[in-house]
Length: 325
Image 1 (cartoon, rainbow, N blue to C red):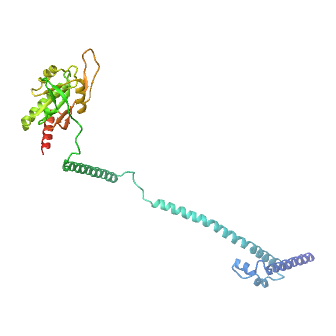
Image 2: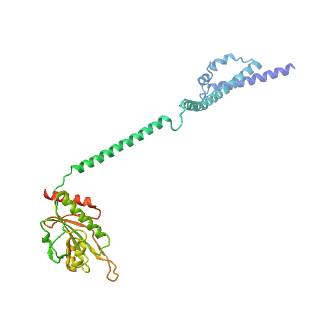
Image 3: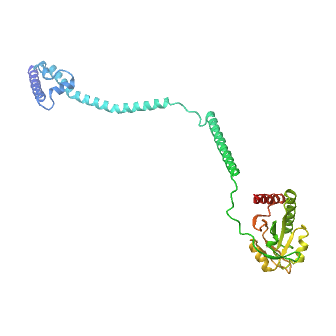
């Protein structure tokens, strides 16, 4: 029994010596230095611990030394794991911090109301009304400027007279040969038509007769009314005479041959043309215009169908007054 115990103790001492020598060789090697290991433990170096371990500590010293070696090998790994875990948790912490900042920022934002408030609606209405009033005032001002400018415009000298009128030779309703010279010295209103006209010619001649009477009453100016036929085939001297006396005693009727009527119509820029014929009954399409001629038988102004008696009267009077200035 004692011999067996002594053998076991001897074996343990040999194992202890081998382990001790091996551990010393590892600590003395340049690869992990004692300083590095000591720094990892934040304590005294292993060299300073060598005298503390007795050689004959047998089982007790061997267990302490084994625990020391196991702690020395596992401590750096634990430190590395802690550092890696801390490095891993830092981004997460940063992310959590950012999330917390976002949540806090979202929580700190003021809650807005509805899309349109009463105040914004009132401001919008006020702005719209202001814009409408502004542009309305600009429009009125522009109209006033145009009106004032048109009133301020003065009539200047005419650039020229229209090429209307000219010499002619026709036969009056009394059977006399007349020319444009027979009408010089007085103002004249000349109208082209035909005696078989159903409605337009009678209306225009009645307006012409009434206007010259009013001109005589208002201004004492005598205007000679003249009717020139554009239907020489049917408008004979006798036919024209009977026709013109139905409208005014001073109305002068003129007719002539086809060539003479063409010449005078061309001189006064008058259009006329026969329409569809049915036996001897036909109509003549023609211009509906009255020409105001001055005492020299020169063209002054024309008056269309849209003028009534009053406008025709006032228009002729104004033209005569302007001509005398």
